[in-house]
Image 1 (cartoon, rainbow, N blue to C red):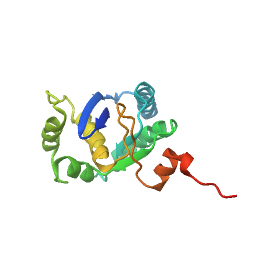
Image 2 (tube, rainbow, N blue to C red):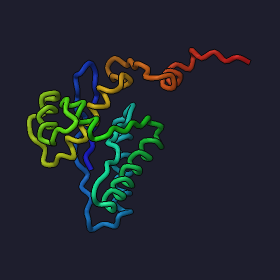
Image 3 (tube, rainbow, N blue to C red):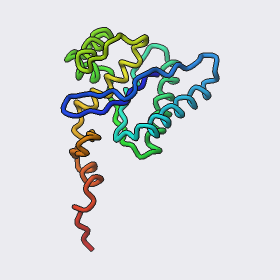
Length: 174
């Protein structure tokens, strides 16, 4: 499982953390799910992100693999939601489209574009980490609601977010 935490402002991306959580196949499936939950909780506690983006489940040929992936994604989402962090899912095609302009791009093409966008010097050992970076940048491009830690400004995206961010502007009629 790849993960990435970025700070983004005006198309400038500062990577705070990027890595892969290697899940041993020798561990029980539930222990692996617990590891996913623990890692997401640690990242949330360490970086206090404003938003959480994840790649949506995709349809594969192996139903058992798809089921296990869906459970892991659900655990990651639940870990973010317990900290009241808004969650957004993106399809693999949408992520590739937003990074490369081509929804059918391969992992190497995505990596090359991410390298240009972030100036990461080395190709990662695992593409799972760059997949996570791609999700984060896709979310930044698709949402004007990421807060810059430096400026502290946050632009509302939709009425629900506007109300959450501006409770003082809501008129209560009795």
